[in-house]
Every structure is written in structure tokens, then in C-alpha cells.
Length: 343
Ligand code: F6P
Image (cartoon, rainbow, N blue to C red; front, side, top):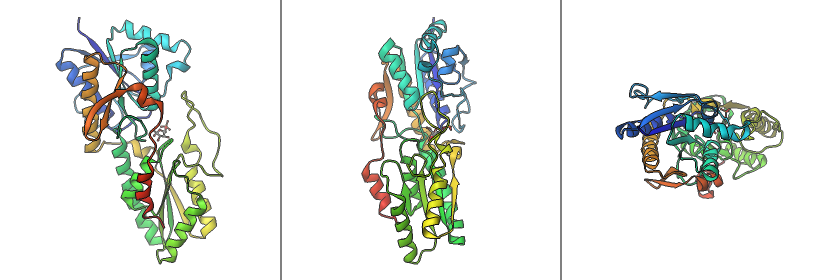
């Protein structure tokens, strides 16, 4: 009997997921492994929903956004008997290895299953937020930054024409990676992120200083996780305990306060899921492909509990445990680059 490898994608969809699926599947098929797609993240293993993947299913995937396998934020540890069902279904489908492609939550489950049950899983770091430890970059981040940068460029047009302050709210649940990178690339005049919580009054004085220098518009990038009084505390919570940040309306609150305090006409744009949608950049396709090949190699070699990672320009492997212990925050050096252009 042939060895069988399962692939699952969990958490938010992310540009490059399909490129990983293709790479894992191609290398596995070449080595005589059967390849199985697990539907909708951990839910597919809890409920036993899978599909066989052949050459036809994995063709034409490089430019496709989203995930052909579907995804959810199902946490087997929060479902009655969930972990037992994952293990039973895994056995019933005669799987020998699993590649889990996900962020802190999906890979957190993988790490725990491996630690507690010796579950044969390897990880691939996916998130537009770029906040996973152990890897310099996750795939999907470059696409999100490109989308946000293009949006900032376009908002400059209206800002300049109308002498307005334009506030752009970008994603990043706990960290300001997208905000800082797109803000540097797009020439933001102020960037507000959770790691370096400059107050709204500091932001206002930066904007005033700029306008006193003769500029009559400004671009402010705010990360959805930035803490500000006046934003909603409550919202929907998922099975991993995360509040839906887009419901807090931090961009709105920032814009309102800037307008009140400066008197400058201010508008807000919330980029939301546009940042995750559509075709991955070439850089993300390449990174996703390299991660997929590495994950297949790790799984075929029985090196479970590991995650493919990028360190410098090398694809290496790190322990899933290490990668999911704590989030990778934006270092002060990066924020300093952005700050050099504030005000
Ligand atoms: O983790 C990726 C991410 O896009 C975050 O930036 C954001 O907070 C969250 O997912 C949004 O989740 P959902 O798509 O479930 O609204």
C-alpha cells in the first residue's frame, strides 16, 4: 500500500495557499505518495471530510487566491470529542502524515497534537499578518503589503485634491507588520500600531507640524489592533478566543479624533479582506512553493513536529512548539524607519 499524505489549510484564507498545496502534492506524487485534501481546516478531520487530489486538481493553482480546500477557524480542542475524532478519522483514512498550513491558531493545534499524541504533522507558516515566530516571513504578507501600498498611493490622490487627512485601517490582528511596511512603502505621515502605541495627541501634533510646513494633506495608516479609547470593546469571538477586530472600528475612531482635534477634514478607508483576496505576488508564490517542498520533504522523512521556515534566504525547519510559543512583533528598528518620515 502507498503512503498517504493529507494537506489542510486553516484560519483566514491567504494568497499563496494554493501554491503550497501544489508543491506538497507534486513532490509527494513524484515519490509515489497518495495525496488527500482535508476540507475546511481542522473541521475536515473532526468530521472526516476529505478528497483525493490528483494531477488535475492541482493544476493551474499558482495564480489562484484563497484555498481550493476551503478553510475554517475550527479548533478541535473546543469541539466535544474533537481531538479523538481527529485521531480516529486520520486513522480511518489511512493517512501517514499531515501538512497543516496555517497561522498561530492552526499551527498551535498542530503543535499540541504532536506534543500530546505524537501526531504526525508538519507545519507551513501562513498569515498575511507576518506574526509567526521562527520564520522571517510568512507567505501572503507580501501580497497584503502590496495591496495596502497601492491603496495608500490611490488615497494620496484624493488627499491632495481635497486637502484632507486620509486614515487607512489595515489588518494585523496583534501586530503592525502590514501597517509599518505599507506605510513605509506608501509614504505614510503617521503610522499607528499596537507595538509602539503613540498617542492620538502625538499623531495630531505630527499632522499639525506637517501642515504648518505647508503641506495641506496627510496619510495616516492605522493597524486594526491599535488600542484607542472610544473603540468598541465587544465583538464576535471565534473558537480561538479572538475578537473580530474589524468590528471595533479603530480607523473610524482615529479619524473622528483627528478631525475633532485638528479641524482638518478627515476620511477613513477600511481595507479589510481586500488585503487577503486575489492573486499572490510572485514573491509569495515562490516562498509558498519553497515552503511546500520543504514540508513534503519533512513529512516524507518522518520529521514531525517541525515547521518550514525562512531564515535569511534559506528555507530551514524549526520546531512547531517554538514557532507558536509567542508572536513575532514588529521590532523597534522597523518602526524607526517609518518614524523618520512622520510629521
Ligand atoms: O489573521 C489574518 C486576519 O486577516 C487578521 O489580519 C484579521 O484580524 C483576521 O484575519 C480577520 O478574520 P476574519 O476573516 O475571520 O474576519
